Image (cartoon, rainbow, N blue to C red; front, top):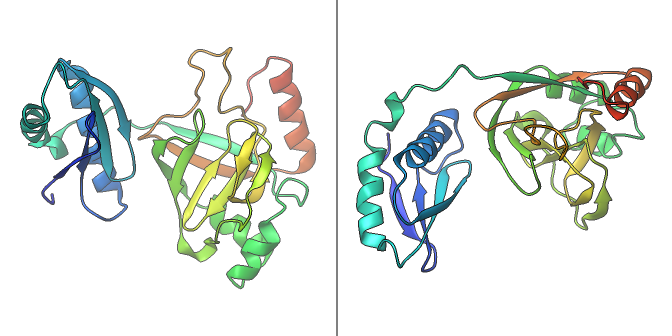
Length: 234
């Protein structure tokens, strides 16, 4: 692997950066270090924030110094590529790509010289690695084919409904809760990615996979009704 870089982030955090490209191999190193740190129980280490290619490590400067922490992290990064993880889980998310749920699907199609149907075909033909969660509770960041990439909105919407499936550049993701956002919305899933009354409340996990399956409006509404009634969606 490329040599990890250690970058101070203020006086209470340290960034460990693996490479400069988005790839499953690089992200695996990030997740491996995240798990190793959780298991190590290093005094002074607090919140850990994984991303596509780096891990942000918060620490208490009264409990550990940045040089000591960097030395420990360098030791932990040795052999990370050999770490074994549980078999990944694939979560299937039904998505309705009808115009009322995907107001930007025509725009994405026009950007790439494709039809609406071709965009849906490309978007649903693969299982996506969940590189990280962020932005809002349980929002999955997924890297996708450049064939259906599209720029963010110039002016973000004030409220995007929960379950909306969006595209931003070569990323795709799902809004777990109603929130502002600037991604191009191409569909919506009735599955609840975040439910505070569920254990665990967040449906997806980094390192697992998501596959989108197209459904019509009637099936979407039926799944949504079951979810509202307390049934299992998806």
